[in-house]
Structure formats: structure tokens, C-alpha cells
Length: 256
Length: 363
Picture 1 (spheres, rainbow over the protein chains, first blue to last red):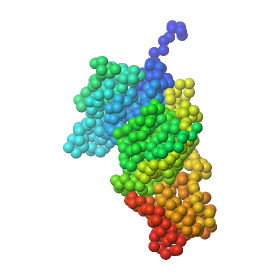
Picture 2 (picture 1 turned 60 degrees about the vertical axis):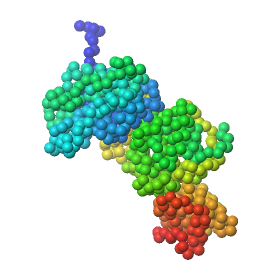
Picture 3 (picture 1 turned 135 degrees about the vertical axis):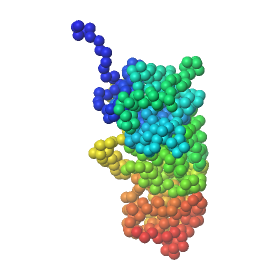
Picture 4 (picture 1 turned 180 degrees about the vertical axis):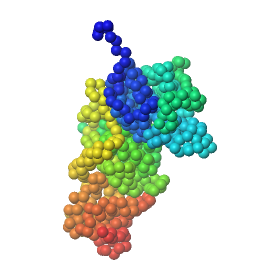
């Protein structure tokens, strides 16, 4: 086969920097970074994107994403993104947040940005644990799950229930699209990528707020192998957080 | 061209001055006694195509400020003491990320919920940095409507020049008072110098990142030295103060903001009697006008500190003057507004050394 006939089938997306990352083996962040970057490349949006990094494992996302980014204080990504989007309304503004950031300390900012219908896309990584700080209980930690601060497993009487923030946000009239995905198989990864693309399309059409929740493995703090972690998402975590479209106003035609 | 002379309320003056200084973004949360400012801007910013958001909290509003500043806008938030406490984390981030912004604190009585009366009890919080980390921000203390206008302009200018937040402090009295004001030339945001560090999409250039996380100790060390160099430049170049009747004065009152207005009335009364008294008014609380005050103190005068708090401004005076002059202190907490007659009594007491009003500070 001649050189000219060779087809490139896999390469580094331009929206990712060519560098190694600090994520643990088997962590879901690197997969989600990759598909997010692929979507931006495919949509030709890299040079029109402004990202907001959270506090948590993805705090250093600006070292990996190859577009403009700002780091928000813990939980405030959607408030920071609101300020950016109002000044630069023609840009794609996205927040990339974990469960502690988005659904515990930043709950108010999350709900109110969504409820204002800010034209922002949020990628919400739900791994049901605090990763960066070493495995403490998250707002999304499921019943019975061991963490360093729930040594006997999450006790619903003592610790309260895991919060389903995506379903809560679906109640807000101006949330246009919310889908929960996982990255446990090539099929699911493709689905998550389609969801991220749809979220970005909704923003660029000016329709309103959208969020893609991604169930993501944290083998380190779950004390599992990467393979066990994927299996555990499918067998256990998805029972509390079932995959699928939670809200889609573009389908019903109400989104415009 | 400067505006015509207008009669306006202090809080509205700040709002109008902000818009004329090129501010097109305001984020805030209601708290008394500063609500007239966001109320004014909610309609005024709409007229000029700007952004006004009543946020869900003070915390959210200061973070919206971070975003708008990172995106290149001249941006402002305002609040009053308890709300400013909530903004402190964001102010620390603004300093760490080197983002310009203007923060207005119409101070009220504290601690806790306190009351809504005039107070200067946030002096430490403003000048020492109420948030975490080694940082400084210029603190401007106007004493009337004309100065509210001019210092609002200056606040935006300093913020952009040094890429640092700037705080403007007043109180409910300052916000409510009506005085004639002439605004400086309006600035069209389009005419402001372009900022080469903002986030506006990386078209034709490498991506930018704005952050304050520096995990490597030598890097954070260098970042702090860089910030300190900037604070040193501000301290050297941006000191502002007013001498009022200090020539030949034997007692000089040191007071700022509302307290200085009251003190000025007292000084005028005593000067009419031929008594050698004056007023030294810090306009920048940080950087504190050390050199000017120290020079005056060398003449062997008595310094009479007067503040609407219980011993905050006086600490900067002690740090500056030391044992060069006798230092006296009189502070009013919790919101009662003293009359010029009371301050006059204080000055007479300092002059005679009878110890009736205020007390001598041991250094």
C-alpha cells in the first residue's frame, strides 16, 4: 500500500495538549477529556471555547485541554461560567465538574445557573466519591458504600440519601437537555460522546442550559481494579443512577 | 466632557460613575444599606447593553465577577459587611489569579448581623485582607459624593493597571446622602486598552489559563514574590490623602470617610475660635499614607485618631507614628453617629490633656 493511500484512523485531538496527565490508572477523567476534545475538534469549536475547571481531581484540566480555561473556586464553576458567558456570548462556555464540586459545595450555584437558563454546557463527572482528597463520602455516595468518612458504609440515617442532582435540575423550566451516561464500554463511551456533542449544539443554538452526567470509575478510592470498577458501575451504581435521557426539550420542540 | 453638575444620592453616584468608567457588568445580592446601588444599576446597565444579575448569594456574585473579569470586562460587585465576609474567598482568588474587579463595601455595624447603621468596623477586613493568603488590595475611602464619583473611576483604573481587585468603602450615610456631583469624562469600554491576558477563545494564539493553583512550592514561592512586587509598586505609587488645616496645627485629627466629615466640621468650628487644629484624612486605607503622616508627626504634634470602630485605624497610626507623637484614640462602635460638637469636645480634651474624652494610647 502506498503512503498516499494510508488513512489516519487515530490521532491526538487538537483540543487536547500532547502531555501526560496525573489521573490514576483506570480513572474515567482521561476518557471523558478525550471524547470532549474530539467533539470540539469535530465541531471546529476549539478556538471559540472557554472552559471552567473545578476543584477536585480535574482541577488541572487546563494543563490537558488545549483551549482557554479558568480555574474556579470549589463549587463555583457555574457562577464563574455565568460571568464569562455574559461577557462572551458567542463562545462555547463549558464547566467540567465532579460530584462534590457540583452537587455538594456548589449546589446553589448549579441550581441557579441552570434555573436562569444560562447558555452553558456542564460535564458532570459522578464517581460517587471524593477523589482528590482521598476517598471521603460524596453527595452521590450510594447507600452502604464504604468511604474514609463512612467506615461502615453510607448510613442513610446518619449520612442522608445520595442526591440525584440531574433529576433535580430537570425540574427547572430552562434546562433544555440532561442525560446520564457511563463510560463502561465502547458503546457507552460513544453514547456519552454523542450526549456531549448534543449539549454543545444546544448551547451554540442558544437554547439554554444542558448537562451531561457521566458515571465514571474511581478504582483508587473504590479499592477496585479498573475492570472491577467498570463492572461495579454497571451492576451497582446504575441501580441508583440509571442511564438515559432525563430531559430533552429539543425532542418535544419546546427547546426553541 | 465632564458631566453637568447633578444632585444625586451617594449609592447612585457610585452606580453612575461605574457605568461612565466603562463598567458593563454588575453581580450582587441584596443587603441593606447598599440596595440603592444594585437597584440603580439594574436599569442603568440595561440602557447601555450591559449585564446585571441579581445572584443567588454573595458567594455566587463574586464568582460571577471572577468569570466576567477573566473574560475581559470591567466588572463590579457591592455589598455590606456580612455580605463582604462571604465574598472573601473570591477576593483571595481574584488576587491569586490577578483579576481586576471593583468591590464596594457599604459598611454596617457588626459583628454578626449587627445593624444597618454607619460603621467603619471592617477596616481590618479591608486593609489586612479578609480572605486567605498573602495578598493586598487597594482600599479607597471617599468622604462625599464628588469623591465617590472620582474614586469609583480611580478604582477601575487601578484594578486594570495592576490586575488586582480594588475595594471602595463607605457606609449607609455615604450611600444615602445627596450632594452635587460632576462626573469625569465617560469612557467607552471599546476605547479601553486591550488586555492581552483575557479568555476570549484561543483563535490565532496559544490557549491561556487563569488559575491560582501552584502545587510546586518553588513555583508558588515565585508567584507570591511576583504579587508582592506588585503590592510594593502600588504602595509606592498609589498613596492618597488629604491635609486639611494641618499647617501649624498642634492637634491633628486622623479620620477617614464618614468620620472625617464629622471631624472636618469640628475642625472648622475650632479654627474659627483660632485654635490650631487640623485634619489628616487617609483616602487610600491601603496603601496607608505612612510617609505623609510620619512627616507631620515629627513636628511634635498630638495625633487624635477618630474612627467609627473600636481601635482599627489607630493601629495603622501607631505602626506609622510610633513614639514620635502623642497618639490619642476615640472610637464609636455600633452605629450612633456622633455630632461635630462631640468631636470638638474630644479635640479640646486632647489639647488640654484633661482625659475627659478619648484616651492616650501607650506605644
